[in-house]
Image 1 (cartoon, one colour):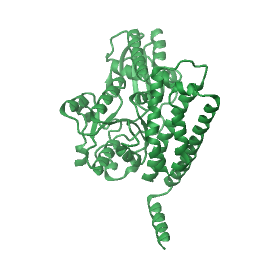
Image 2 (image 1 turned 135 degrees about the horizontal axis):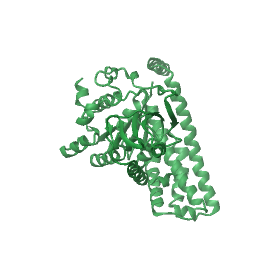
Image 3 (image 1 turned 30 degrees about the horizontal axis):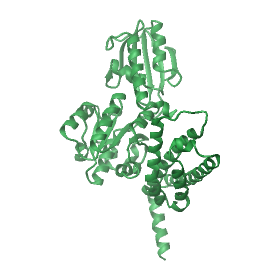
Image 4 (image 1 turned 180 degrees about the horizontal axis):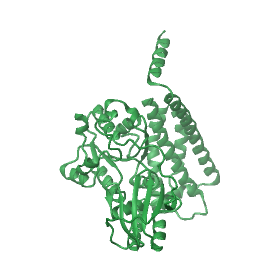
Length: 144
Length: 284
């Protein structure tokens, strides 16, 4: 069976991870000195990805209850990486910090995604009736 | 049953609906509440704002045996459609934008099943356009329960034929191969240069198609309801599947009259246009 809340959480998380990966691809490109050209189109795509993350991150983290762990580092990354050219001009130390913050958020999201997928797998092996009964008894135990 | 009839399908699509399984449809067990008869339907959903405008996404994700993938832009959608097989491409959004994107996708993928979910019911002109392009549509400005039932009705038509393709290596197959190693253009080019006569069968998850050659000329092509050059154009885009060639089978029907070289150039050009439209190099 499918749990609607779990499916929504996984969907939000997948979208967030995807945007987060896209951002990393852009940052890696910008930091790669062997690729000297940064086109207007690439800057446009980067801004679009950044805009999506700025809009959605807080909402997604609230839904997933990870605001405290992830929101601060996310904003660090998004504020430091203002444009591809800006990323290219970062000092080695700033670039290292940017990647560390990116990695901290990515790790958090990845671990949570794994947990939710495991939960989904467990749910799929159970019938709807057994899940409902389990919930019912859990609620009674809590009331008692 | 009234529910199933209220779903707005284009006239042309209604004739061929359901597309792959004539046994499924309004009387399917899905409508009677047994969702287990629907097997792994793969959806590609184009939704520019999937986090904040997720009403229909919630419905799709709650359905059993439905595998969904979300993209935010049409170029991302085309990128995925070029590489993966999907049963249904869902375009969701503001009415005008969604219709434009659905029609745009139709230009690149003539046989793709497309469902347009518009924020309000389209006007007569748009309805006619969608009808002509064989694009099904549903206005999402209806109560959630009703919308969920309509979406389930539509998906019930996409019960996929599971299992591997039934063909094995037969002595009469003079050439057998995989499309991910040799594209349709390559094998057809080779056969046409060799002045071959016979039938190519292409099998993929999108369905089966046939191209008949006669003395190195394409004589007839068929894929589902598509025939002639349209069918050839469709097969050109396939990157997954198997093919085999049977020497000496000649078609009595002739639906293609242009020389192979013209077909090849036109179709490769179209493919280039599709690839350009997604800015494929940006993804690679």
